[in-house]
Amino acid sequence: MRIVVVGGGRVGSLLSKKLIDAGHEVIIIEADESKCRELSEELDATVIKGDATNIEVLENAGLEGADALAAVTGNDEVNILTGLIAKEYGVPNIVVRVS
Image (cartoon, rainbow, N blue to C red; front, side, top):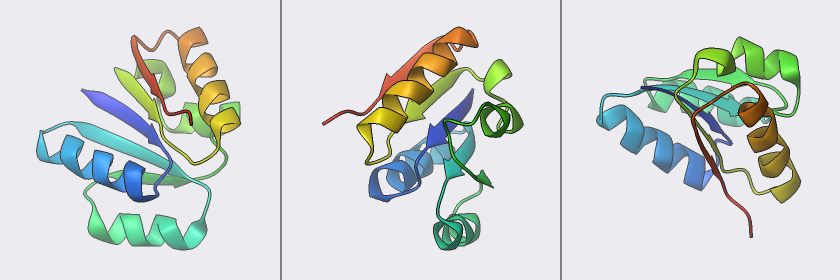
């Protein structure tokens, strides 16, 4: 499965590692440049720096052909909006973290 993970913090990086270990293709979208470098070095995943609410960033991450999206940033608004966009793109499995 190709899975887009939005957010590379503790939850996002742990989730990504578990998904990679299970054999899935993972694309991580992270806004913080230093965190992107760290994730690129630690994980066998594609890491994209950018705002996940930006359509161009989501398209570059391959959202249209994704099997799943997990929005797990610390920002509820970003997670909800990204989930809604993924739904419009026809992503069949969407998980959104809200507090």
